[in-house]
Amino acid sequence: MDKALAAKQLEAVLKQASAYTGKGSVASYIPELAKEDPGQLGVSICLPDGTLLSAGDADVRFTLQSISKIFSLIIALCQNGQKQVFERVGKEPTGDPFNSIIKLETIKPHKPLNPMINAGAIAVAGMIQGKNIEERLNSIVDMLRKMTGNPSICVNEAVYCSEKRTADRNRALAWFLKDSGILTTDVEETLDLYFQHCAIEVTAKDVARMGMVLAADGINPQTGERYVPEEVARICKTFMVTCGMYNASGEFAIDVGIPAKSGVAGGIMATVPHKMGIGVFGPTLDDKGNSVAGVELLRLLSQEWKLGIF
Ligand code: DON
Image 1 (cartoon, helix red, strand yellow):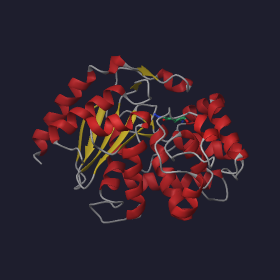
Image 2: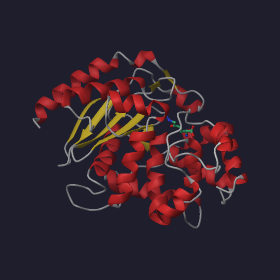
Image 3: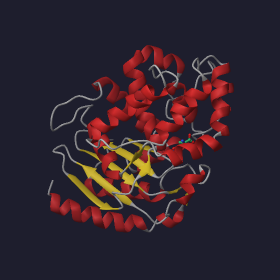
Image 4: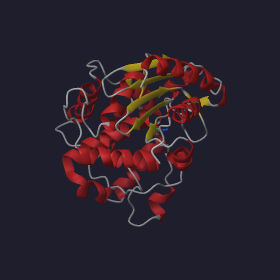
């Protein structure tokens, strides 16, 4: 790849996608997120040799939100193994919004359909082991610090507290899971862990580095250091394709064709197997909760660089 040319193309794509920031709105159900400047858009690409190519607001900090569901799943799978995890959470897309409750009751057995929806991620948080919440949270934060080489990654307390104060829907999901025997740990403690891992703060550059580790099957391609078992990385990338963009995952797979995971703060982590990790930040969302300019940016980039995996 000609890096100078790629950097120019990235600038051009960012400029084109910026026109879309006005087509969505910033998440407001977590009050702290409503304060974001809606005009922001940033992108960063991490290549296997560690090079970062960035454009726009790539140094602005935002919270992972649902992108963190990939990393809580990694820890839960490493600690418990596939058999135990998939006894409590399924592997199927839902076609419903990310915070939907309906299928928890109508589908049998009453387990969340996948770990990318809120109910599934709360069930996964319940499976993360440790002697207290701090230790359980640190297993995720430590892994992210290693993957990004950024030791300052931590939880944004204001966003965490804002969600904790207003998360009645997630509370309802968690209590339902408790009643169904899926959640066997303390409900409020498990929610606390979930809210905190959603509020881990990063930049698009950090997210690009995380995406690169998954693109390299779980290792840092420069050093060979392994952070995620290959099989677990494979499972995560598959969930990113089938459920990563919620009930827009099918459309995204056809239009963009790259494994990706979005969050309501406006981040998207995309991973192009063996080629690159991509971090995008654009806080205005479409009606499914995905960054509207971020999705457009990835679509344009995928077209320009022929990144689609299908
Ligand atoms: O639980 C929630 O609603 C948020 N902490 C995370 C949701 C989210 O990011 C959905 N993504 N698009």
